Image 1 (cartoon, rainbow, N blue to C red):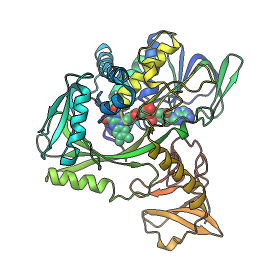
Image 2: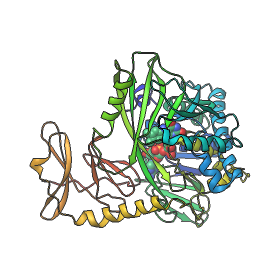
Image 3: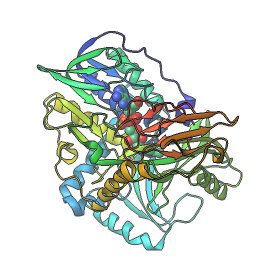
Length: 498
Ligand SMILES: Cc1cc2nc3c(=O)[nH]c(=O)nc-3n(C[C@H](O)[C@H](O)[C@H](O)COP(=O)(O)OP(=O)(O)OC[C@H]3O[C@@H](n4cnc5c(N)ncnc54)[C@H](O)[C@@H]3O)c2cc1C
């Protein structure tokens, strides 16, 4: 299901890499982070090659909700307690500066991307959560003194407490990327789509990036693939997990609120408005869960639809989409060196669903590193930090889930049969002791695949909301025909004849 952004605007297409290339910097991945990297580096005169395995911004960035804000849920009380005031202030300043930088880029390059200044709000409707809001506002006293406590909003229901950040923003991310692509093309960045990097090797003072049929040699590499596809070194698969969320675009047939909102209790609901062919619609998102869990339409889009109807009875849903983002165990993105043993390879990942500002922070820090300039924020986001694991429960969840899916679930006998699988749904069956992932389309045609993730071999789960095979270990995703649609896996599933 396509997002409003991908339906509404088109980015120019680029051809596949067909010959070996050589440049100063090779950027792998053209989402908002890879494109922002290409922008800053090419503005500073670097000779850049940018490769994208699919289409530019067609993955997470094409399915975001695109609020541009330094208000990342309730993060400041946590940062202050965990790391102290200077650290928390730097986190805020880095992200607030990103809000301003994005506006500067848009104005400086005349990018028409429905950019609008909006206030941002976190709120609760639950008495039991008041204390959390009050702790956050207290922490913000010395971090963002302009933050305000509120007890009502323009949302179509009552809230109990909330916090306002003024002068934040929202935009259409695909129109923004389109503007940046025009600019980086003028800056002579060589762009290739449908070009996957499978491996990187070091040779003398250079790196060689291996694609389907060709190589790219460069002194510097930036991994901007969202979830890094190199497992070792770096070990990012052991330092973060992925969380999915759902969005619907709704014509409410009424006048809408101003501002961008997110609640603090589970289930998460997120609100903003957006322009759809000159009409202002509601983007209602949320219902976060760890990617790879068994999920149904009822758990996801149906719940959002029901909420939209409750709040806006005459509403009509026009768009449905979902995506996922990398969540780090200490809530802070990984930005900087990919690993201590591979000099000049950089990474930006773990944006914790706040990648509009975090990708800009990452692109500026890494550009400064490449230019050997100091950046006052780099220590906050240091990607090679040795102790990112603050939340031991998250670590336990991750390890147990991976072990279960790698070993226990693979040994479990499947009770399902091909006859029991309904039309337009999927499930795992067993034949001659072998597990088979089966999807039955509306006409009863069967699509059978080996339901084992091509990344590290975990057993996949069927996602009935999006009709995909999802990995509960590291969140690779495959369509029902077995085509890999989200990394870290890079290979399709094996098709099985039954
Ligand atoms: C539902 C949802 C809502 C969100 N809303 C917000 C929001 O309101 N505000 C906010 O700040 N953040 C938000 N986020 C987070 C934000 O969207 C992401 O953090 C950000 O888009 C990630 O950008 P990226 O460039 O890292 O990843 P992507 O956009 O996924 O880009 C990575 C690119 O790398 C390519 N690639 C992968 N592997 C390879 C390879 N081996 N070779 C070549 N190319 C490769 C992929 O095809 C992809 O195009 C949201 C996230 C979700 C899940």
